[in-house]
Image 1 (spheres, helix red, strand yellow):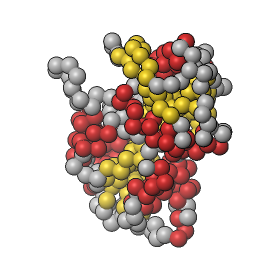
Image 2 (cartoon, rainbow, N blue to C red; image 1 turned 180 degrees about the horizontal axis):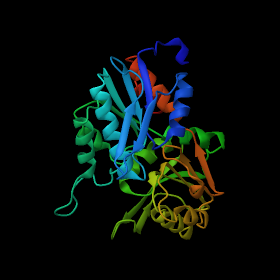
Image 3 (spheres, rainbow, N blue to C red; image 1 turned 90 degrees about the horizontal axis):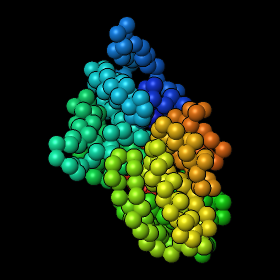
Image 4 (cartoon, one colour; image 1 turned 45 degrees about the vertical axis):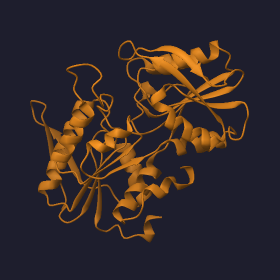
Length: 323
């Protein structure tokens, strides 16, 4: 596809957060990854060196700010500064996973808004544009004074479930694990021509959840729970257990970002979930993998968005069929 477009003034670089994904994006665009040296000083400080000219080019930096989040964030900030000082024409940050996004508003007194703080730093370091997949909260786009292209992972997940035969079935429902995720679940439900179920829950503390009630018809049906991320797995597992205890036939979980902190992989494998499906926006290390898990590729989506941005084409048209 990329051979039909002039990508000669575009360069693609990767930090250390997810080089495997960066290589797949480069393959889809049919261009090489740029030469970038990352090293450490003796005291642990990050050292960056761009080993080719960036002057006058559209630069795309692929760097999800996943764990180790602080290191990956700092590496991104230093890369941005380096390319700004190297006279790049535009610098687009491609961060499939946006770290520090869960504190996007003040819920209690004296809390920070880290999602806005990260946005401010990215801008101050010289970014011209940001590309992300499934931000934790839609309002994060408004934290930036530069363009933000918000990509959606549900079409990739939806196509997977269509291939498995879950479309146009009366015994399939899509479940939002909380009220905040209704929009995402509704979009997948429309794609599968299924109905929507919503779990009303409360969080007494971080990474803890209590199911209050479940709204919708799910008894005797196959449930597909969709969320933007799975962290420790506690929320998704408790939701699945509540659905099964109240009469659901089967529960599948899917998400865009497999954070999988602590013993999440063991918890998900030992849970009543029959399957877990995710995208590869975060590196899937061997300890994160488990038999129930299916990982779907996101490189084609990112490559298409990058090509469209460079060629001044509409990015939203990527999702025209599913809106």
